[in-house]
Image 1 (cartoon, one colour):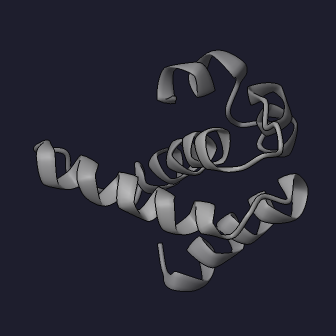
Image 2 (cartoon, helix red, strand yellow):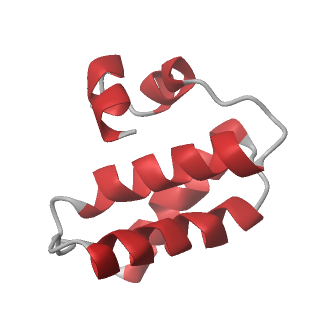
Image 3 (cartoon, helix red, strand yellow):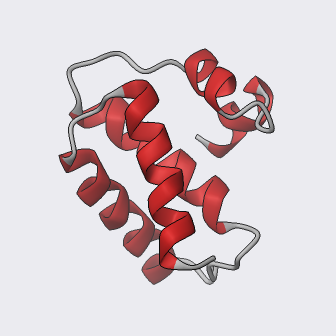
Length: 88
């Protein structure tokens, strides 16, 4: 995916859940650590699920607002609750 589609993905997530922008930085750190310590390479097909799970975990750990997996299912219906739980 290009930068614009990644930005739109993060922006739509932010617009619906209104999290602290620092969560984007923390999510990037999570993704960098995942790729550094594992043999997992980011692919175009895996970028959105990885980004979604990193943002979700960052929001739950670093933000004072509560983010639930059910809320994410409403925003992104192509991820069901079981899939989000597995990603997380």
